[in-house]
Image (cartoon, rainbow over the protein chains, first blue to last red):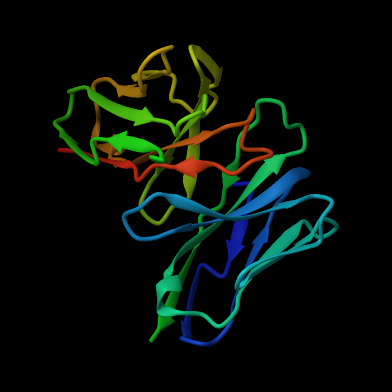
Length: 113
Length: 116
């Protein structure tokens, strides 16, 4: 079963607005990562947040992690049409030796020009 | 600095044929992961390999699917006697360190397999 569950499944906003996407997971993690996938392409890594971190920024991206609630959020500020893509959260389990990332089903973000 | 290269980008096979998907990891990366993506679905882990070793194949179907990552050359995902349910996008990712646990995965653009 999927470890990460993103919410909402789909999001449509106007250019310039902020987009907030959420991810919940079930078991303990070492870190949580967010990826973007443009149509017909592979996934591109956006940001990694470790279990002992609460917030991280990268450009227009802000990620938070609440390990007590087993949830994370990805905020894209001042969205652009080019941000239109699918966004996935992925979790890495606490027992890290030879482990792998488990992905959620993704959120489809549409940014209207 | 080339990224992860997958070929072919598109592959069409008739039922019963074999499909071979190739993946060359990023330069300096010795850890390769294969994932499968169905329409409207996330990525499902299939197998994790290091050079000449299969580390975790818990996501691979027991029959018809195999993977290798030889000392020289690309990683190969092989599907024998394909069926329509094998139609999907297959993504390869590589990482430099031990796993994706502590570092990001770098993905190729995938191979889209269509079984007719």
